[in-house]
Amino acid sequence: MSRYTAILDGCTIVNMELALGSYNYYGYMRNAGITEWVIMREKTDNTEYKYAIGSANNTYATAWAAKASQNYRTPDQLPATYIK
Image 1 (cartoon, rainbow, N blue to C red):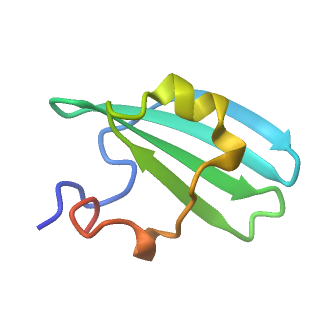
Image 2: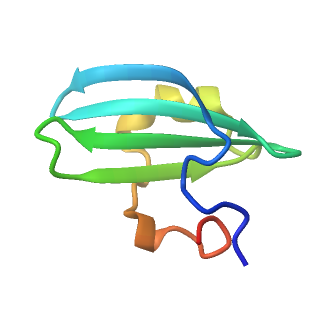
Image 3: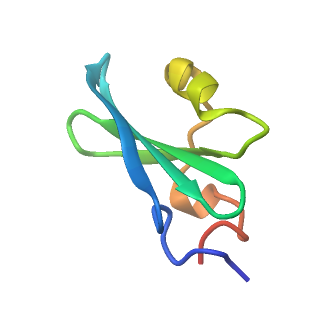
């Protein structure tokens, strides 16, 4: 059973960096008892959207600073407990 029906449920956008190489990056945070974060990477030609997700074990500040080297996945590759 998933906690969320969409990847960005309950998220607030906190950072955005456009046109870093071939990608735009959007940073989101959610507080669901523990702090969770999502970084969305969008190809600048709008052909691909992938996500990196994490929690308090990997702080958002650290993840955002290393956003270009995160492990990005398509929605179907995210953990089943994360989205429906």
